[in-house]
Image (tube, rainbow, N blue to C red):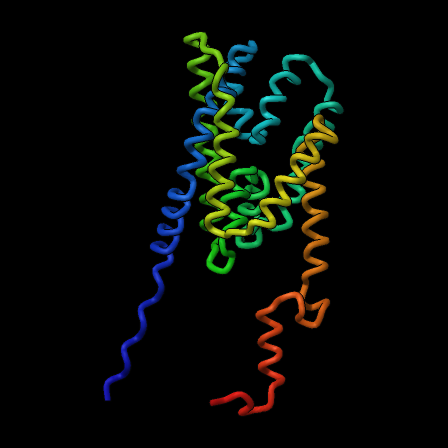
Length: 264
């Protein structure tokens, strides 16, 4: 009797290639926002008196979007390291909340996780945290962050070079960031529709803008997390014996029903 044929081993390289291609497809929208916004940063850097090569240095070492724009003024203004550290902490404080649901543990290597933390931006979070985590791989997470980083690096370096040689200005390019977040929000809502969460987010943003316009982002995110935590505590079915989820309540009722009851 012939031995059964062995199943072919999974093509690890092919699987990684597919994951990278998926990441490339996912980040096209981010690239359309990062390229002009990065170019605006590069032009602003060049017109501030810094050499063009500071753009790739900032984009590689800082890579924090709004903090890079602020870093131009901090560097050219001769601000002390203490103020720079405090400013960076408050501007990037929102990343503390991002880490709660970002799929960093999908990345297996220590070096990959370090880069994953460094390259965690608003846009990378919006792309990865809203997708189903069951099929997410470390390759896709890393590739998504790398593509986003390359888009920003390309835009900022190109903008710095053009700004230094052609005397361009960054006026009129600021719309790119707002447009990018609108597109990401629409995409996230389409992939996982949740109208109550969207309404809560908008209400927190408006309230924070009215109460603390100077610290709007930090206040809005803190309030949003607090409201979501309270909402989860109220609707968590484990705290109410399954009453928070009608489907689980129905399953529990069906399980407790005597066998054969209700059968035709």
